[in-house]
Amino acid sequence: MIISILVFGYLISSLLSGLNLSHLKACIRKGLPPEVSDLFDEQKIAQIARYTADKTKLGYWSEFLSTAVVIFLFMGGIVPRIALWADGLRIAPLLQGLAVMLVLLLIGYLSGIPVSLYSDFKLEKKYGFSTITPKTWIGDQIKSLLVSGILMGLLFSGFYLFINWLGMWWWLAAWGLVVAFSLLMIFIAPVLLMPLFNKFVPLEDHELRDKILGMAKKAEFPLAGVYQMDASKRSTHDNAFFTGMGKTRRIVFYDTMVKNYSHQELLSVMGHEIGHWKEKHVFKLIFTVSVFSGILLFLASRILAHPWIYQAIGLGDLFGRIGFSGPIIGVALYVAAILFEPLNLAFSPFMNWMSRRYEYQSDAYSLKLNPSATDMKGALIKLSQKNLNNLFPHPLYVIFHYTHPPLLARLKAIDDLTK
Image (cartoon, rainbow, N blue to C red; front, side):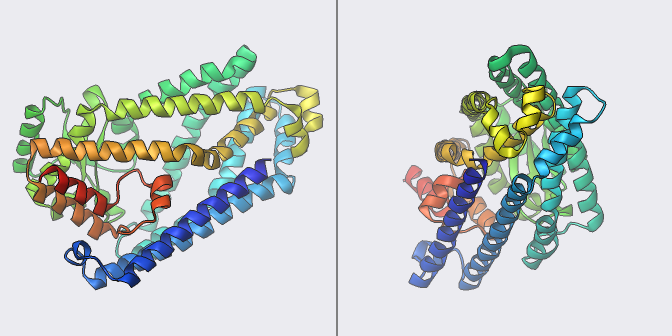
């Protein structure tokens, strides 16, 4: 069953990616509509097509490799060997389970290194995006492993204790832990985690900073600060985002964006981010994700305690001897983790629809603060041109993968608002 779900998820994902790429090529062959040819020349469109094709091919290989590694771990008997190894360690059962989980996740991480290297040092450099150095890349990997290991260890320990204390009701306490953990990350990520990877400084353009603070005051938006991030040490991609809560709430611009956009364009971006807060989008998304996570944890609690799963894996004897404990829990939570992505396909259409809807609402709010549609459209067009975003995604691909509306749909919505 585990392998069947993984293979099904891989096939669906590959099909969607193939449809998306074919749709882009077909739209280009038909000839560009005036609303596109007026904004993008043929050279830029050709570059977008090549970039999309290269990323799609890399995505095929990445998903194939990760799926193949997991299948090999189960069919090759690696998972049982790791579980039996951990069972022989003279440590607490909780640590045995944690060892299984971390070793299996580490194997998955190591298998993804070739794709990551190719993406950062070949594909992204080919299109002038990647500026990362080997030293920075290695430092990122080490820090990511350490941070992920610590956070994963904390979550796993909580799950393990709940399983032992609460039996079949463990999922309810684990659900509360996940929600609390998510809220905590919103508060501490901007001040503890993100600075591990990037340098954040107050916006250096004082004139722009004063305009942004004035807009925030006008919108009654409690802003702790406006920062720029040294994204250019890794990539030339442009972006801006809203992060944090309370005293950690801040707006962050990539330094690449600050250099290449007018003040009015950046203010329209700022207005959009304020819109997310005013419309309470963050809390609505957290609530929705929390409901889905609760459903998945409930299903996991009902499925993962059955002996037939471990018999199929080759751990029937170990399960019969120690029950749902120690290394068995490590295997169970690993299975839950690897199945999350393919199972997420079932929830992604609704989540993405909601996210795209919120993007339209935030655009509308930004236009209330800064009524110039030209500035907002100019910022969106620059973002799309600079990042080589696909202008003609397949509708099905949008449903399953796009958290933001495609550019042309977004520009039309802005025009409709300002008629």
